[in-house]
Length: 324
Image 1: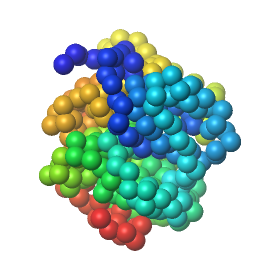
Image 2: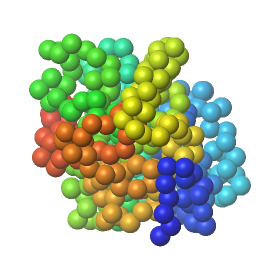
Image 3: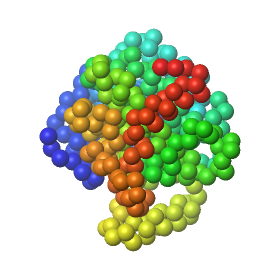
């Protein structure tokens, strides 16, 4: 199998592949990585259903996907869903189950980052509720539709290194709120979701992995003032250089979505199952005391720990009132 890296694009990863007959479900296809993931799949003949919060906005943003589908014979459909509203997640997943059309790939792509303190419609801290609990309900409800050989890809981030999960205080009721700590908790939670899902479905040939797409300037930073983002980025890059690393390169959406496509379609299932992937390979596991910058590669052990994954799985079920 060809070796890909941080500079590989979605089209390079899928070069020569025919995905006709494959069906994918992707959350958050109205911008950035979601649009590019959907475009790459339909360009190779896949049938893709993507979720958006705003259908009007998404219609314009996804023209490139519809154009690619028209040329390849693939298909693309968008549905309205809000991960911060579990009733919305359940309506959409119920409709998918009622249709009884199987999926080969589910991508938990959508998310929010470093938001001011807020709550989901169900009363959960916004980042944990959206990024983790919304996807927990969704991927479990879609699980019966997954074909043997199917995969679930959950977008984590190297931001998981900002914080481990806190299952005693997931909603910051007793902890001072910090947007980056909340983001870190949610991305650790996303990585652990993949570990737990993989453990529960690998026996039937369905695997799951989490991925870090790299740093891409997408709408994910919409909650930050441009000056604040630039200041944070500059500070993180200075720390990165001080540790002896080469200058950091921001990825394009096509490079960022390449790891999703690699793990979801191309890579060996046993290689990626239950793992954290980045730059189109399985991420290295960092030592507990490893000193890293925000831009360094590697996963902290707490984000792929099976016991933590089981604990999160149980807690998520309690919080949403739905066990799987």
